[in-house]
Image (cartoon, rainbow, N blue to C red; front, side, top):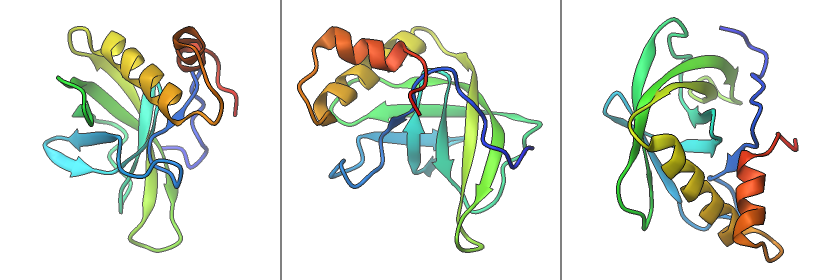
Length: 137
C-alpha cells in the first residue's frame, strides 16, 4: 500500500469536521463501526489505528443520519497515513462495487449534505455539480 495520498477524480466531501456539529454519516466495515472522515462517489477515508490489508476487499455500509436505507458494497484500502500517535491514522479506500442503487443514493445524500453545510446558499443543481465534479482540492 502506498504512503502517498490516493487521488480521487471526484470531489471529497468532508463529513467529519468542526463545521459539522454531529456525525452526519455512519460507516461499518466488515460489521465494525468506524469513524468516516470524508466521502466521494469513488471512495472514502476512515480513522483506523493500523493500516488495513490493501490486497483484500472488504464490505462496507454507509448510512446518513435522518435518511432511510443504506449504501453498501465492496471497497479496498489504497493508502494509509499515520497519525500523530501510534494509535491513529487515516486509510483511504476505493469503492470497487456498489450494491444496487448505492451510487445514486450516495450522490443524493452527498448533494443534500453539501447544500446543508455550505457557507453560501446553493441550489440543488450546484450541490450535485460539486459532488459529481472534479476534485477542487
